[in-house]
Length: 121
Image 1: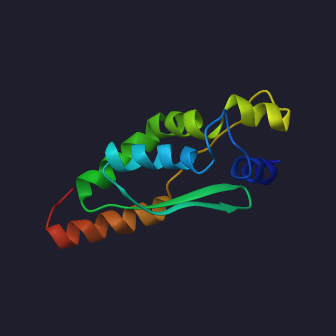
Image 2: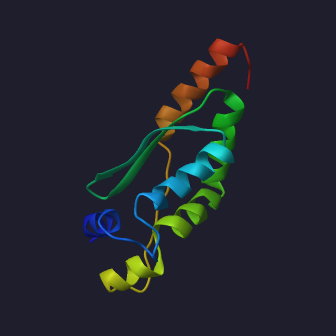
């Protein structure tokens, strides 16, 4: 069902918003609020959507981690990705969305940034 939902999302106009603008609005949040560089806007893969981001400082990495850990990033993603139109088209009442950051990659990136900047945790 998740792959079908991803495919439907990518192939529809959700709530009258062109599909290319929905990820754009999510990406605008990532760039404007979290100060991330979105390097791969949206890539469909089995099981969901993948958005790849880059960050330029340890502070930005920590802000992304906190936003994800607190559930706020999930709420923002749901607002732009899981619309009433998408649920109606798929005939589902609710969608369980998971937003995650690869923990091992996060630790490696944090360590690298700390080495480069000389910062200590």
